[in-house]
Image 1 (cartoon, rainbow, N blue to C red):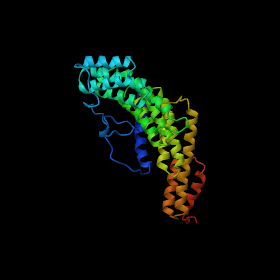
Image 2 (tube, rainbow, N blue to C red):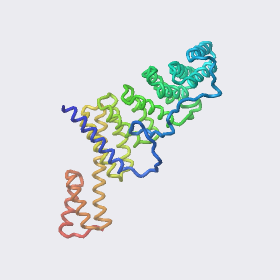
Image 3 (cartoon, helix red, strand yellow):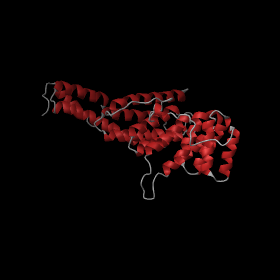
Image 4 (cartoon, rainbow, N blue to C red):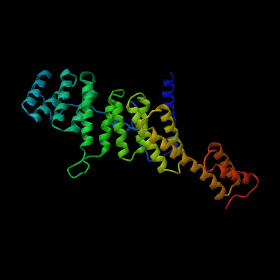
Length: 342
């Protein structure tokens, strides 16, 4: 029961910090958001136009047989003889002419495998996605997901030319990983894939989106082994953003709250020492932020009432800090009628 309560508390903390994140972020341009059958934190929203439409009859893909079974035999024979182009067109013709026939699913699967064998990896991935979209109940679903995962990994790790240039943007590759998770939101591979998606976000300096992905993993798979890594990586991103935006108190507070919750949830975390160091650094930053704010009211605005209120708030929260004695002395002076400092 205690473990269950702790898990729920950690999930609630993540939800709270997500709200705080909205306050801490600077504004960014937005557009019309598309719909998604399921919302995934840190994933790009799906647009209605991105839906995979059913293939239709085409002049370029004409059948050579009178039945789906006979057409499938023609396609398979061409492929066996190494006539890949003829096989591809025969598979396509079958799928388009008889989309509801059992052989259509077989042809679509064979077409995707053919594209993969040809090392046309982007096209192979898309053909597998068409198979999942239109023939989910008539294909080896897990095997198709495994093939998509292998293809996405290949694209991720072979995305440079011999000169070191990127062959394609990481956005397109990341979206393929996101698609796999959408295909099986509770699949065994989902936590691992979400870590990959988060790492791609980090590589593109999209830290807020990476945090959303990692915390989405923590919410959906709190007991998965990958949750330990996700907690550390989310803390790392939050620490980096809080230090970068050292003026942003809400961001600093949410980072502190998250790391405290993560360490409470995972007291034996393998990166506990590093996370504790980040926590101490951010706590010191928060103390300095509040101290400087109080001093600002005292010395810049020269507003005695605002300064007294700020000094009192500081002492109520940071009574043991290195500034505490100085703040108490200055607050006493103000309460005795001293003028604000110049």
